[in-house]
Length: 494
Ligand code: NAP
Ligand code: MG
Image 1 (cartoon, rainbow, N blue to C red):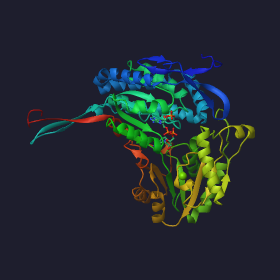
Image 2 (cartoon, rainbow, N blue to C red; image 1 turned 135 degrees about the horizontal axis):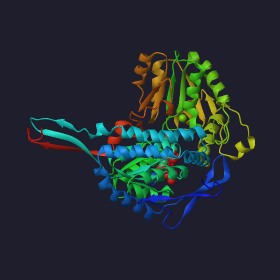
Image 3 (tube, rainbow, N blue to C red; image 1 turned 45 degrees about the horizontal axis):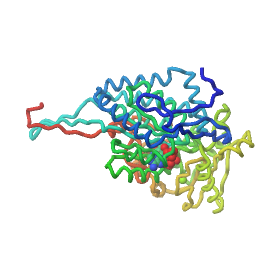
Image 4 (cartoon, rainbow, N blue to C red; image 1 turned 45 degrees about the vertical axis):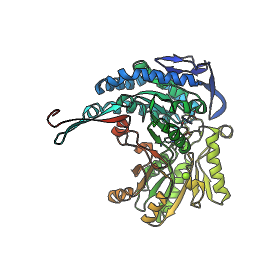
C-alpha cells in the first residue's frame, strides 16, 4: 500500500529508468476544486533531459522496429493487462487524476479503461499490418510495404490526457516507432505514473517521458533532428506553431486541434429523457472541456421550445462540486486561465443582452466560490456574431439556436473555421446520412455526440482549423509509417 500522506513527486522516465529532472527541478500541481490544496509535484525537465529522452528512443528504435507485428502486439496486450493488474493502483491513479484535473471519478476511470482498450485494439491489427500489398507485372512486380518512421514525439493536452494518449501511443508502438511523450503541464502526474507503468513493460528506451513547461522543452522536442514525427493534440495556435517548427527538418505532423461542433436537431428527432441525457453528456462531459463536445446546438424551430425545456431540465439536475464526491456530476474547469476564457465568453453574451440560464445545483457554495467552477450555462438564441457561437468555448457553456430548413442548418454548421465533429439527430437514417455527407467535419455522430459515440476503429480528426491527418483506427497506425515500394522486372518476385 502507498503512504497516502506523503506528498507525491512524479519523475521523468528515460532509458528504462525513473529520473528526477536534470537539476532536480519540480513544479507544483494544485487541485482545481480546491486551489489552495497542493496535490503533488511533477519533474520539470530541462533541454538536456529532452535530448536524453530522444537519444534513448533513437537507440531503442532498431531493435523495436525489427520485431514482428505479432511480437509487438504481444507487448501491447501485456501493457493492457499490466495497467489493470493492481486494482489498488488503478484506484490510486484515478483519485490522483480527479484531484489534479477536476473531472469526476467515473470519467477518470473511463479514460483509464479507454487507454487499455486502445492498446488491445492496436494489437488486434497485427495481421492486417503484416500483409503487404503485391502488384504483379507487367510492367513490374511490386511489393508495397511500410516502415516505421523512427522517434515520434507525442504531445498530449490536459483535457482528456489518458484517452488522447490512447489515440497515439499504442498506435506509435504498434507501427514500430519509439517515443518521447510530453503530457500537459496542468495534468501531468496521473499521466506520468501511467506512462511509467507502460514503459516498464516494454524494452528499455521504447517509451520515454518528459514533463515540464512547454515554453522550455516544447520547441527543443519538436525540432530535435532525431525526431521523425510529431503527433500533437491541443489548441489551434500551438498546433500552427508546432507545424512551423517542424518544417525546418521537414518532420511530418499530425495535428488534432480544437473544434466548435454543431449538433443539428431535426424536427423528427427523438425527444426522450435518454436523448436529452445524451445531448447533455455530448455538451458537458468533463465540464465541456472536450474537443468533440457539442459547442453549438441548432434546433428546428418547431421543436425549439421542447428541446430547450427538456435539455434545461437535465442541466438543472446536475450537481456541481468536487469530483471526488460521489454525488458530484460535474467538476470544476481544470485551470484558472480556462475558467476565464469561459466566463469571458458568457459575460460577452450577457453584455449583448442574451437570454442566459446558469443551471444545476451547488451543494457547497463556499467551495464553488473558491474553486474553478462554472455551472452549465445555456445561452438561448444568441446573436450569431458572438464568441459563444463563433469560437471554441471549451467549458460548461452552450448556445442553443433555432433554424427553419435543412439548408439553413447545414449552412450554419459549416459556417465555421473548425471542422472536428458534428451530429445529426433524427429518426430517419437516410435523412441523417444524407445530411451528414454535407457537413464539413471529420466525424458525424447520429443521435449522439462525443466520446460515447466515437468508434475507436475509425479514423478521428478534423477539417479546416481542426487539424491535419487522423488518429485512431488502422489509419492511425499507418500514419506512423513511411511507404516503401520494392519493384523488380515481372516474374522476378511473383
Ligand atoms: P495547448 O495549450 O495547445 O497545449 C497542448 C499541448 O501542447 C500541451 O502538452 C502543451 O504543453 C504543449 N505545448 C505547448 N506549447 C508547445 C510547443 N511550443 N511545442 C510543443 N508542445 C507545446 O492546448 P490545451 O489548452 O492543453 O488543450 C486544449 C485544446 O486542445 C483545445 O483547443 C481542444 O479543442 C484541443 N483538443 C483537441 C483534441 C482533438 O483531438 N482534436 C483533443 C483534445 C483537445 P504545456 O501544457 O506544458 O503548455
Ligand atoms: Mg462555441
